[in-house]
Length: 303
Image (tube, rainbow, N blue to C red):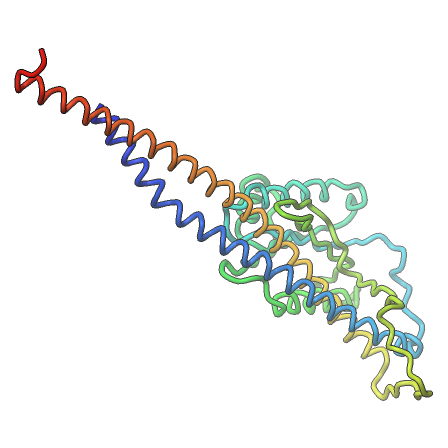
């Protein structure tokens, strides 16, 4: 009985040591989750404001180049977005499974696909399962902070430079960039999704985002810079903001999944602590009763 009591007490002590760590991880995940959603909302508002500058610029643009319109992409960059840390369930495995389905699509049968990976965890899973097709580029994400806009901006500039380059003269041109990530669907819920980032298709500004009407006549805006250069700059910024928004959405999905797992682990830990506490107390009562009986028998009080 004393051995059982010792084992139960050791297990209780170990679980009591782990419980504060689980609670801390749960709190950190909750804060990062809410911060990701807040920053995503801010990025979305900024992207909407960028679109309000398009109407006067579009009216002054020359004819749009159509030599690549309707042509299937010959070289595609597929970007998998995962996580840098674990303890998030099947978050990274889901991205890998969706990427496998994406590569098997008939539309990419004749295309040359380049894989790029953001996140160490999804990179490890891919390397274990698909050694024959290794990503050409991999970048780790921050383990202590949310994805930065600088990361999204640098990636966007590199992809757009290859997309806008002369397709015959460039050594590494591309026709499209697709992002594979986990879209946020609520508390602890996400689903893999694919977003076509490039070629950029800027949406028409909603009517609600148009500049407010003025009581008096106001002259149209004066555009002294090359309209095509302005449009290219806005398109670059908009794609970078859009990518930043998607990276934050992936981070929100990751942190929400981690929060749910830590919440369940914390509840299980508290339940185990209660059960082991009852077990230890019962074992102690039995040990005390047995000692009292032995003392009474040694004193000749009982046979």
